[in-house]
Image (cartoon, rainbow, N blue to C red):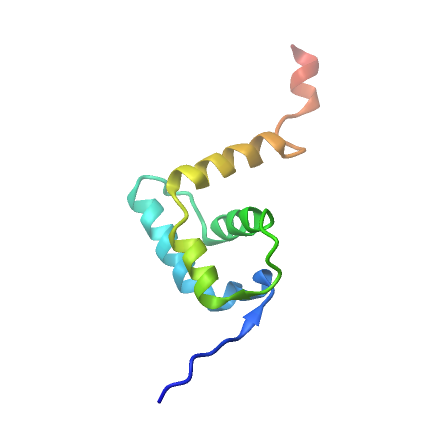
Length: 98
């Protein structure tokens, strides 16, 4: 009889083990026309969205579920917010010229 692994880890530590799911999600987004998406961006989005939950320990099936159920719309919304809230999204020199 096969025993199920109940290993839990902090979400950030799961990256190497869930990389195949991240690659799959990246390929899905490339297929949808978002060809510049990377595994690292998807992972940052997952981490950002998971911070809103109170869970500190995650099991692998929970992490993979978060990755595979991430919608393209949710990812693009997150990416847009990141671009706007990034400290370097504009140059001060550009503002001075106008």
